[in-house]
Amino acid sequence: MKKRITAYIILFQLIIIGILVYKIYTGGSVLGSSISVNPIKKEFQIFPKVNGLKYFHEPAPDRKLTYEFSWTGLVENGVNKDALKDRFNYSIKKASNVFRIITLGDSFTYGLHVSTADIWPEKLEDLLNSNLSCSKYKKFEVINLGEQAYDIQYEVERFKIRGIKYNPNLLVWMVLDNDFSYIEEELGPSLSNGAAELVRRGVTPASSNYGFSLYTYAINEFRKKWDEGETLDFQMHKLEEFDKYYNGSLVFYGLGNYSLDNSQYIDAITEFSGNRKTTYFYRSNNPSWDEYLLLDDHPNKKGHKLIARDIFDYLMKNKLIPCGAN
Image 1 (cartoon, rainbow, N blue to C red):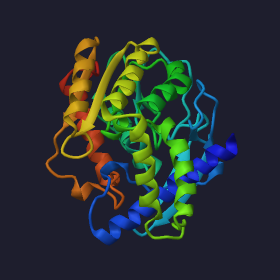
Image 2: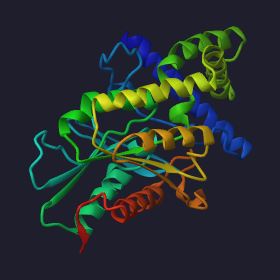
Image 3: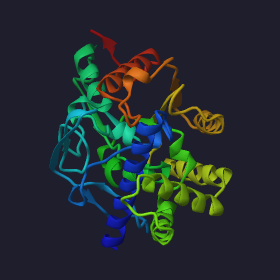
Image 4: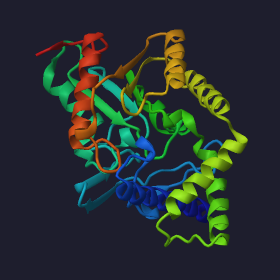
């Protein structure tokens, strides 16, 4: 089973590397926020058996990885003892004077190609602790559950196995169009079949169009089984199941004019938020993201800082943090 999962991850990385090459040579954005290049090797991933899922993965706990591309600068990834990309290890028991936030999402929340200290959950934690004065709460903790290549189903599972025990006061969930547009668990077989089919056609991993061709094949195969409406219904069902595990305050956050623009998905999140108590949906409308993005279309260091400030301001404006500014 591990060999199959590892093969899937390798295939996925070949896809995204190929797409990035395609993007560089065409000078455009092929897949928007779904493009990524990930140098992480298999020893930096774990594959827990979760709810019958074959391809569910997490960062390996208590690891540090440093790498550098010309377009990223030096990246220092630190993963804590609970398999979370976070600077700190957190006690399971929450002190009475601690206000605890959990962040949930995919590679935008994980902070792909950005050092751990610079990702938006960490910058949000810094903003809260340096700018607020509370009588009840002396410390703010922001615990980051974000992980790359996740959809809604995987994000829910991640919270179940990692987040529940921390008993958060608030959950901030960053959502993207691609959280709803495909099912990660269903892409694995399509990728494996696609790799074999491309070889039969004479397209090898050394081919310049291999990654893009493999992605196209996998998505086409996926769409034969799941149309867009069925995929959205599946992910919304997983979202509705989330209430079994958490019924506290929840903020959905998305980047308007960039990674959350599909009206069907926006309507679905809006309806869900309206039907759930203490649930908020904030879609940021920054007019341009160009200067805040890496070459692979993920937020850069400046982008993460902007996101953290945007969320901080929203939480304060809507009195979701029971404190005043210093």
